[in-house]
Length: 329
Image 1: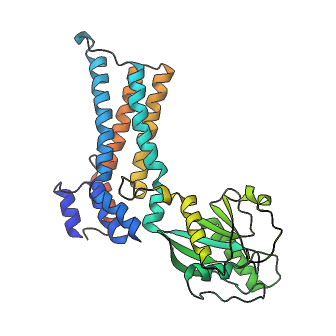
Image 2: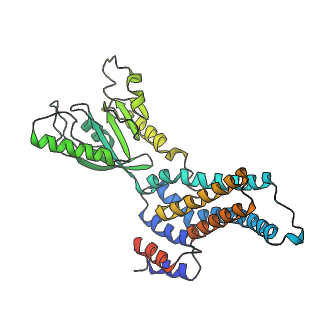
Image 3: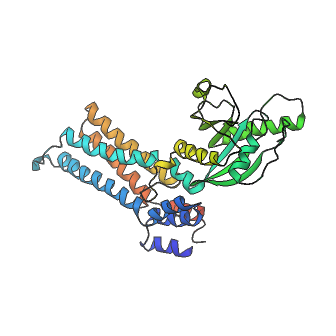
């Protein structure tokens, strides 16, 4: 990977492309690799470059109007300012909004399977794994520790954690398993719940045992979950149903793997600072604070975008990027 750092230092790769090299190497699955390859081919750099060009042209006009009033530079109309700034903010909003879904495609997501004892959690784990990973018995409390298994569900790698059934117990070993279950529930980026309330979390309620007569009313728990889906965890077709639901919930079904995307907290932070600065410029226009205030915000946005592409990157930032990805060592 010495070549990647050398290519960056010689100006043959931008910083976002250098980061994409390791994203491509470590990508988990076809879609994640496609996202990394798009960045390597310059999709993100071109997208950010277009937004920088728009802001630079705006800033040039603002500077000329503010600094050289004797030259009769035409004033920027508020409508033109708002139109340009709104368009740039919209593009940055889209990149930021899609960040989490892109990260899921690149890296996978930790997924906790939770619910009461004997609700079908281990059966669900086995269904998603494609083999008998967990012991399944009619006895409640069979699973006493967190059982882990990585699986591929559609385009997403799920790091599955089958947890101990959540209930009150006097058994010290089972109680420790339940404590670990609650911890995993709090940490998970996705929750597949079999009769467990998870309000405010990225959680799908799987109403199990669809093959048996039931009077269950999904509306009773609809407010506690992002989705409520009836399934039979013993039927292979349920795997496709769950995969589609997970893709909708995590937003990966809306990601164009060949489009520009942000990768890593460094890029996300820079894009967010740029978006917030553009929003500040819009507020300055609507609040009547004058073009000087707008110009300051646009400068801040341009600085943040240059940070993202690496044009303003300090030696410390460059070292951190390449050390984090073990590039150039």
